[in-house]
Length: 241
Figure 1 (tube, rainbow, N blue to C red):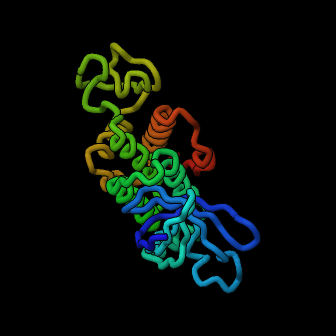
Figure 2 (cartoon, rainbow, N blue to C red):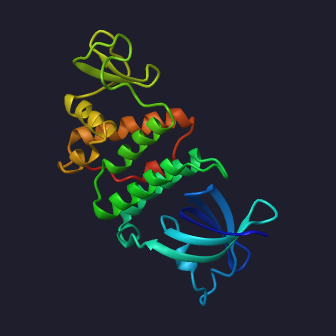
Figure 3 (cartoon, rainbow, N blue to C red):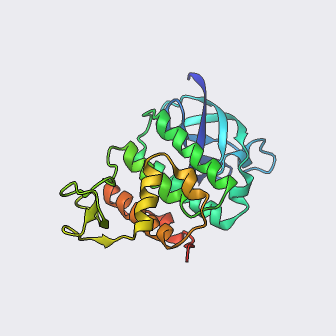
């Protein structure tokens, strides 16, 4: 069995036997990897606590003969302690992990998606803003080639005012072609900030009603693309009243 090193984010885990754990890791170099960490549930385990969801770690693994590789070493890259110490933040982080776990393919490297996920977790650790997760969802859609049309009406190209958002049409709509979900000018501006690389501007403003609109639009758009509901989204805290 070949030994290799990589870095990754733990997406999810489950118990195996009395003392082992299976981990699903989204790695920089190999994409999504499933591996068994032997003995990590024992109290004397040296690195069991480093293999929890949201952990950003440097790993040493053996290539397994079947579907599971074997973790032999794990070192923390980012502690991200504020994520696991705060219920709202860990809930938001879990939504990001579930989205990546659903989209990423086994052993299919995607360095850009890896960088996006690490960036989202670091942002959440630094500031618990309700736009971080929808911002990540929208960027994820753009990365997959399904960026919503936001610069003009998705039907006629009219630049505005844009007053609705429709999943089937794939973006914002003008007054003449409006259908789907109504949107406010604040939500339109937030969508443009997120998808034009200006998310930091949106995060510097206190969340308001527009944030809730964008959260709804981003979640519905991603679930429409995935053709499934995201379980963790149902637990997200909703702020921005």
